[in-house]
Length: 432
Image (cartoon, rainbow, N blue to C red):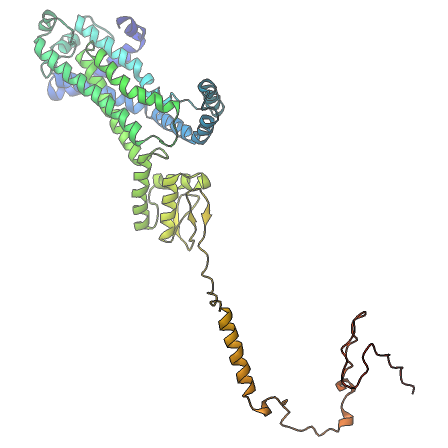
């Protein structure tokens, strides 16, 4: 471990300088030789480092979101090569390379802060051995060796002998009790953080190697902390416990406000967002508009929870816009589970019920009886009530009766009364 820590010796001077600056501030409040002054200096170092790593954390979230957009393609690859695991892995790596994503992006914050971790270990190890390091001189070294946290010196370890612990002004029992409690808390916080990620913020619709890696890390990391924790000084345990608590709180914030699409956390978030938007009839924050904008832009690729969110807005007369805002509208379109949008049709006019043959015959018979019982004058054509003063000869020729149309060729016309059966000879035109 000392060999590994020595590789990061280039950063021990900046780390020791930051600790000394925080110690000068807290020493005025709690005293320069107290465990509170040195312990809070280490905690403040963690907070400063994590604040500097926020851009890297944002990049990690974006990389995770990019992984989520590849879920449909990853699912196709799994179905296509479900019997060939090697070909499946090759196609997955090819997809990662083409899209520019990395499934190990979640380890970036841990890798980024590892130099600070080993530098802090190197500084505390120097305090334990009584050697100055970085900007820590002899006076600061003597003050740090006197500092105790709940009875355990900053430089003491779980595996130290009783003589070494007594040289630091403490008892072996106090050191082992304090270090054991801190190791358990450190492992438990790491396990809870990883389990929270796996159970709430992972798209469970697609099984990917990335999920298997995260599941493996959920059990491996706590065991690693428990094994290596017994060789860490108390000051390093304070550092690692603080960074685990920070990571847990940071992840809880992200899961609550920006969950992974398709996860249980997204279902809970969209349910809260639906109540909020329907109550205020608008999106009030930039984060809410970003979520709604992302959902609208997906179109037919929305998951079950996103379709439910859009349909809930539609039922109350609200329409989500492409820019993330929500306005009142008259759209009644509802998106089904397969992504198709349907609009309820207008009610059709009800057709009369079809009558049976017996009913139609009885109706026809009733109509014939009513026609026979009608008066005779009803069959006479109606005449105009006013007589025309013009003589009949003055009527236009167009009023003359038109001749009957000629029957179609090759057919026989029906014989009328007083005429000879068979085709009639056409009359010759009259001569003037």
